[in-house]
Image (cartoon, rainbow, N blue to C red):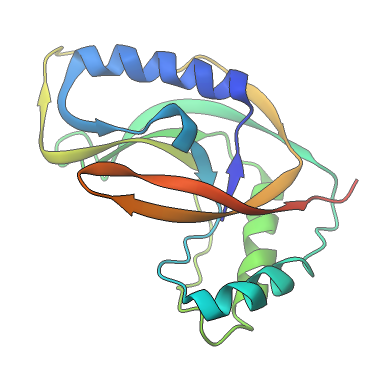
Length: 180
């Protein structure tokens, strides 16, 4: 489950990724059409559970209006020395945390969904995964992130399709609007 990004935001992030690609080697960069903010990671979900999942998720009615998210800084997880993932950390927003909590509470009601309840999630966009070892070409890692802002007005249930030697492809299955 995630928050889709408007096409202009995806384009701006793709521009940042291209610059980072000049500074780092050994990274599988996330394609533009796969960029999103992860809300809840569900893992493997059986085909027979998807219908129930969609029905339950449709019952979530956030009690707040659409809200704004914005980029903050480029970071490495867990850190630059042991980097496994490169992310764009987003500015913290209490509505984001409320949204995560509401969907997690609903997902707990589906026994077939096995997920860990996580609190205080740092909102982020994954932009690259280190394949084996991160090689730094430029000594000063580019961590400048242009300030991008956009409205969050829906949540998307994605299906992740794995392909041979390709990044996974995220296909939207359903959208759930945030009340206005």
